[in-house]
Amino acid sequence: MHLVRTRQIMIVLLALLLALAVLLQGSQGFPPQTSQLHGLIWYGFLYGLPFLLGGLLMAGARWALMACVMYGTIGLALDIATAVQASSGENPSPLVLTVSGMTGLANVALILLGGWSFLDVRDLGGAGPR
Image (cartoon, rainbow, N blue to C red):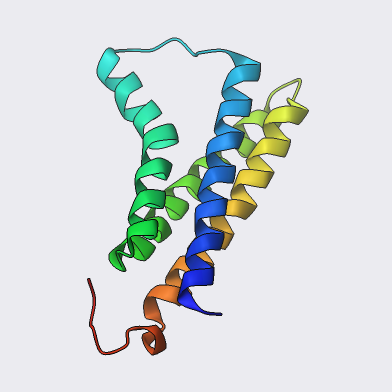
C-alpha cells in the first residue's frame, strides 16, 4: 500500500477515535475531575492529540507515523482496562463495552498501519526521515 493512502487511512482512524470519544463522553457526561491539570491532560489526550497527529500526517512528517503507533498503544491499553473494569461490575454497560471494542480495533489498526508504514523504506525516495 502506498504511503499516501496509508496516511489517509490513519487520518480516518484518528477521526474515528475522536468521534467515538465524543460519543462516549456525550452519553456519560463529564466525570468529576481531581484537578484542572488532570482534565487538561486527559482531554488533550482524547481530543487534542488526534487532531495534532492528523495534521502532522497531512504535513508529511514521517516520524508522526511512529507517534501514531505510540498513541494507539496507549489507547489500546486504556481500552482493555476500560473493558475489564466495565465487565467486572454488577451491571456492565453495553455502550462502554461496545465503544471500547471499537476503539480497541481502531487502535490495533493504527498500530499496525503506522508501524508498517514507518518501517517501509520503499517510500523514502532517498530523502531520508523527516
